Image 1 (cartoon, rainbow, N blue to C red):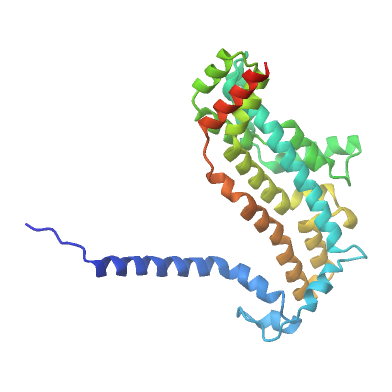
Image 2 (image 1 turned 135 degrees about the vertical axis):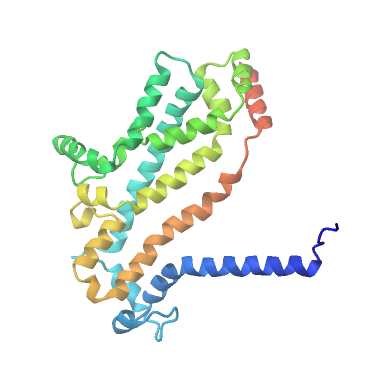
Length: 295
């Protein structure tokens, strides 16, 4: 019994069908974003009724009108506030979560498994359950209407998800690297600095990208801790703009929504190539050799 043989024409037809399906799925997923982009250039009357992706008339003044903001506070201030919070959160998460993950994954100390289980257990706590006690603590500290409640917890390795993420990555690295470094006389800090840190670039990049995206798009905590208009971030400022009358002029509101998406897209495009970078044993060996030469 002979088996059917696939012809070149059949293979091309299958690839064409696959590409067609993927393009259709991509268009369906991208339609909301494309519609927001088109709506940011429509007039108020056309936005209420138009569902096409091509405005009848391009109203570029929507961006200037939206950028002026509300109550004398422009969207430039909102973007600056979001940048301060996002940079502080990224820096805190990358540094403290990497150090905590290194301790759990590579060091040995009493009750290590117990404390790691406690850290992972905090993933089960909903954010809104912690909001009330956190709000009371930050109020007593006088931190309300400042970005401190959004940044300081990141400096204390409070995001257990990223600790778990980096721990799993570090466990995938051969422990022979550690043994080689210790045999060369490296201390735990030198082991971290010259071995673990260079090899952790993919995990660091993933932590930075996800932290930036989640922090920039975060809405509820920023609205709670930064209720004043001049302290608002981009998401909460966009909400206050809509409440203050942006719904009656949707074009400027959609224009600011488009601008609010740009930092996230640019940050991801700039750093996503590092996600595919692999650990290089040669670089690790070179670092250890340089450290031996300095001693």
